[in-house]
Image (cartoon, rainbow, N blue to C red; front, side, top):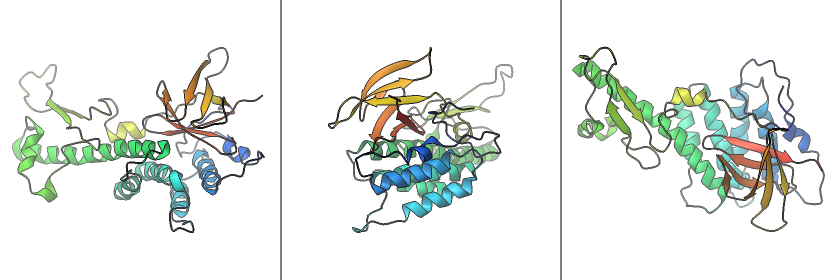
Length: 289
């Protein structure tokens, strides 16, 4: 059973967990402030996204419905939460193997205007990491084809520069870095030359650059609560991570990070905080007084 303030991400399997997402409950908390519509919509989507037995298709359709809603100025009703929802949609599409659709959803989350909004910047970063993993799959396919034709892998990726543009795999990750690629030898088969390789993004890291590995990453299940320290902008909060006796605290300013967790936004009615690590969105609830 998860801690009441846990923000564990759903795996959308036939889990036996019966946890009810607390952000749904938090929706009924009343304060003097008027909630922005995008915050209410995010709470609704996050609640569905968090449900243990929900299908990927249900979350995908819910995200798409919300993303298509327009405000009076014909901009997305979700405002800065729009790219957040598109990355959640993209993750669920990846889980179902719908890579082309996932690419479109994640591309829609990219920050083409160089925004100063922490939410938009974080969504851009998350989207680029997942898109890089998809791009890596294209290089893997090109390497397999090269191996079929030459019975070995190439010494470096520059060999693909000679291919027509339409057939050329992306030779840089979505952060703009060239892929780290090198041949690897078998430990015992010393004469099996150029039959193995390493391929990863230096920005993502060797361990989680592979799409399949990243899709199996466990979500953090450590409870996090917060106490707001000011009523001005940028917001300062005191985060409490973990449960007694193994808790740690930190004062964090909006847009900054503590360890691998970045504080991005706080609900206008103080119902939740939105955070992220490098690949996933996280939420925290206000500490009990």
